[in-house]
Amino acid sequence: MGCPITTREVSASDNGENNAITAVSALQAPTLVSSTWKVKPSNNALHYKYTFYVKVTALGGSNKYFGPYELDIGCTTTSVVYTDAASGFVTNVPVYVGDSVVNKYTFAQPTSSRAWCVIVSNVIVNNDATGTAWSGSSQVASTQGCAS
Image (cartoon, rainbow, N blue to C red):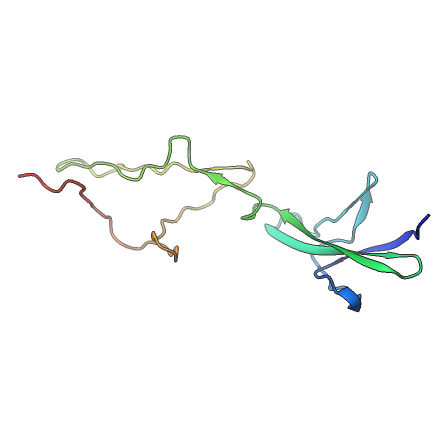
């Protein structure tokens, strides 16, 4: 029979030979829940992704780091996937001379892979690598030109 584990600690890094713990203040120490060791956040209302290691120490002082592990809490970019609405994303709406321009385009909300991750805002962004908010005026484009 091996040496029994005496402590389990959460660390922000694998400190190797140093063996010092780098505390992760937002995560609680591992606790035994139904014969399984679990790490829980101090505040489960935050939308945050934690990366951590677990250091185990055996009777006699030998220790080892395990990990890294990741814990996604809430609606993070790695825990939720958004999908275009079933109606699809419409990229253009024809408007002819004399047509009303009111309510011509309706933006259909995407759906979230997690029901509790509710979309709170939409921002039209530039179609480039910057993704900055678009601040221009309405754009009119013609693919066929004007007929006389």
